[in-house]
Image (tube, rainbow, N blue to C red):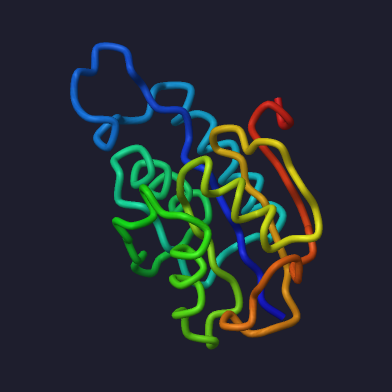
Length: 162
C-alpha cells in the first residue's frame, strides 16, 4: 500500500510585502496553523517516508515547520515546477518516486493541490484551505496512480482543529 499526503502551504502574508508572490513568507497565523497540522499528522501517525515541496518561500517555511513537528530527519526534495504545476506535471513527479518509499508528502499550492486530490481520489472536494492536508491510500505502485484509484483516509485543516 502507498500513502500520499497532499498539503497546501500555510497562510502567507501580503502585509508590508512588496516582493513577488513566489517570495511571500508565512504570516503569524500561517506559522501557528502549520504547527497545529504538524502535531495532528504526527499524533495520527501520518509520517511520510519522503517529502517533496515547492520551493516558493511560503511552502518551504511550511515544510520546515512540518518537518520539525513530524520529527522527519531526512532531506526533502524541492521542485520549482510545483509552484505553477498542473495535475499531469505533478503526477509525473509522483511517478518518479522510488517504490521503496511507502508514503509521500507533497507540499504545494492551490488550485493544483485541490485538483490533484480530486483527480486521484474517490472523493471530490471544493477547496483545500491553507495548511489543509488530505491523506489518500493506494493499492498500486506510485507509477500506477491514476484517475480515482485512491481512497480518502483523512482530510483536515486548521479551523477543523480549533
